[in-house]
Image 1 (tube, rainbow, N blue to C red):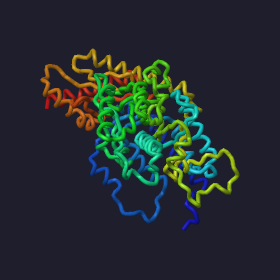
Image 2 (image 1 turned 90 degrees about the vertical axis):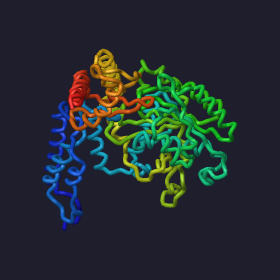
Image 3 (image 1 turned 90 degrees about the horizontal axis):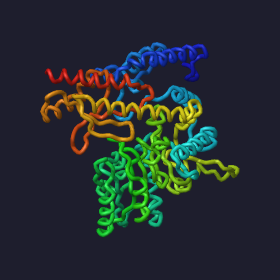
Image 4 (image 1 turned 120 degrees about the vertical axis):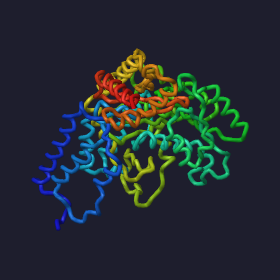
Length: 482
């Protein structure tokens, strides 16, 4: 047996070269990458159905197997034929950053465990606040994604809002029930967060939206007043800086004013669209974002990062520490010289944290934010191109419009009844998945099923959009003939 897990320098060089070859093969075929590979679940499970390995295997042979069973069968998140959910394709310098981060294996929790990585995360927080015109005193933390960012923001909200009740120690016992307000279009991570925080989804008020899928401000006011009269404690408003269904942006300035009027916390879910507020031509749409008490952002969307990295911003570092600090003997800094070191373990729940901010820092250094903004603009322009193509096509119907990069639409065919249109669009999702050329999902708008295309990928072109519609049309016609 070896006395370590390391390979010899020559062996490692060969493994790294093989890995580089595999990466280059992924990019060599990226324009032709299918959206999905239709393998039955049982078959995929069978590839990995083996007892616990007790003896090692040749690393090169292992990489060959990985290519065959993992890389070559992967859902096409990198390429231009992915339209489902919000998959931005990642970028190459961030892939390199992730590899380097894993190599040096820093735990970004205490300053002396990762000095450079701690200072880089602080700097990325500063840059993020600059991007969206948030307060320069902002504190923040890198998290796994938008859901974790919302949970983090609402945790700080609960703890700070309820500080007079000493909720960190006493919990919510004996208090009036807290109520939270958001639109019917708000992401489900808000429901999950409210449940985890002990507030209970029964106290989450989902307010109806207007014709643009923005929260109805009058109904919001009426609900808050009704809850006050009923003995509840209105605590937080969640505003949408771009909903995941349609890209709708709530009137954030009006929401901030309502929150201030009723002495409530104002959280913004900017996971989908918050970073687009950096574009001058859209800044007016986001008026009021700078007034938020906390903001959830997702860098593996508009910053084109590989999974996983999100971010929570709050107005200052102190509210993070108030929510998360816990004295522990083995984490004590009393013997350290007094400096401006920031300890992330005192400002967030996790003690073991990967250095997620490094890939964002490398991306912004390598490409520059102007180039990333240019990709944002391109994706928005491609969405407008898709909307125009749909609006002018006799066999498609545009179902929503937004300022962001989501288009909801239906295939209507020719001379199909209303019932046939519903049936064929619902049949399209599994049929397109089986076909595999493009990957798109559906959603519901006011109870009606629609196809939903999200266009956040710096590798897409107008040819990609044309191909999407051609494939949907082809598969739909095949369904019609069955």
